[in-house]
Length: 238
Ligand code: PGA
Image (tube, rainbow, N blue to C red; front, top):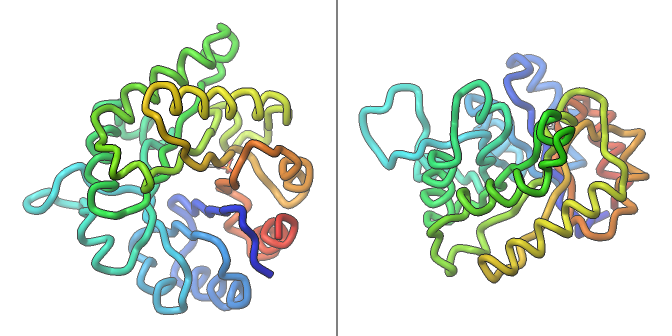
């Protein structure tokens, strides 16, 4: 069954070759989601007809950047999506909003649909600065992108405190923050991107989260690594 909601699976730096082979085999009949594996495994997923996203791309175009993957390399393989600004990239790899903006501009202008991840830390939430944080990220990350490329932008609202922690905001909190994102993007940039929620989604809470009318889909981390769990998630929202 087809769903009109978007599901993205972010595998992060997980699974070995044998585990990936088994995963692809088990997901054979469940390809209606976007899978973001470690880059080294991307060709296997593409070969089997999955829709594939890359977890990270370089802000540079081409050349002497050891260890990096360019946007054009990704699209030339058949990769359709990329994550940009995931909180783990922001935290562990020190990607600030200026770098994220460069990556986003490079991706969207080269037809790689970009899933821009934004969200507040627990400190920011506790200080009552959630909306301020979101607004600041949107302002910097979306800066100076030509409007012709807006259609290549999806936004994922991922509270940092909910990622990999088992903590999930209430549906009301998610709805309020997603509505704020929509209004801010409409007022400040005049477009209406699709918005995903991400953070500790699993096969048990997906039914409840799926009641939120304002969101267009889900970004799943840990639970996408286990075939039965991601299959249940896909089936629940189909
Ligand atoms: P999680 O990760 O589902 O494991 O919380 C979500 C993400 O990092 O996108």
